[in-house]
Image (cartoon, rainbow, N blue to C red; front, side, top):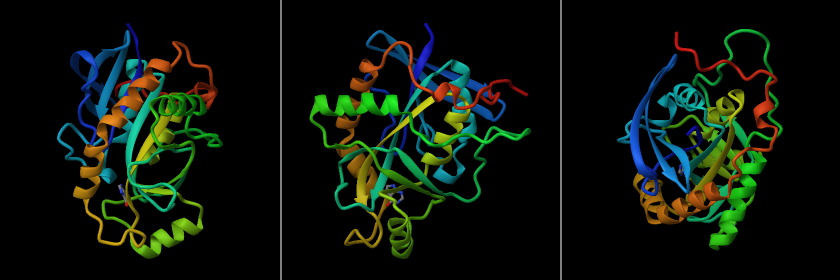
Length: 264
Ligand code: HPA
């Protein structure tokens, strides 16, 4: 059976717990080899990948985003549900709330961020995060009674350091709601590959200067772990709601999705 759905687990989401009949695979791509797990949920094959490696050892600026998305594309994945721990710039988006990101502001600096190596290719980014996947996630959150904001602008920083309060003030003035270090280029690469992509962000803290104290990675991990069961319930309910065939424009984001699967 084809693997059409994948979960990319971010900080605090390391275990595909709910999947059964798990098997491990390493997919080799022209960008590197990617270990992942494939299992079953609700009669479907689902791939599970940890963004930062199995032992959370790869920092956000060094994640091999191209290899990760190329591997999922090679498996035939059509829809990616990604998790993200985020800081909040918006007082209405409080710690433990979920946000279905709909826009991003890119403040990354030195990451390989495209599969395009030749030709003039300009990808439409009007709806970077798949509106259909977001709709199913929203429905799932409603059914489960979780606090979930249907939209939010994610500011992606280079990391690995946290932001200064001055940067956060600037991001807020620019319209940012959330801040994190990984959604770009992941969402861009998925779009280039013609894969539907949605991010379920979980707020772990108010951002620097808004939070009363200093920020720590441990605080982020603690909140993710504490509310991890709700995140898993949300993902699994959304997967159960997904139709067998997708019905949105993501697969045609580029007339010809950029070739990502051939191994050099
Ligand atoms: N900044 C950047 N990334 C983050 C934060 C933050 O405050 N919280 C969780 N991931």
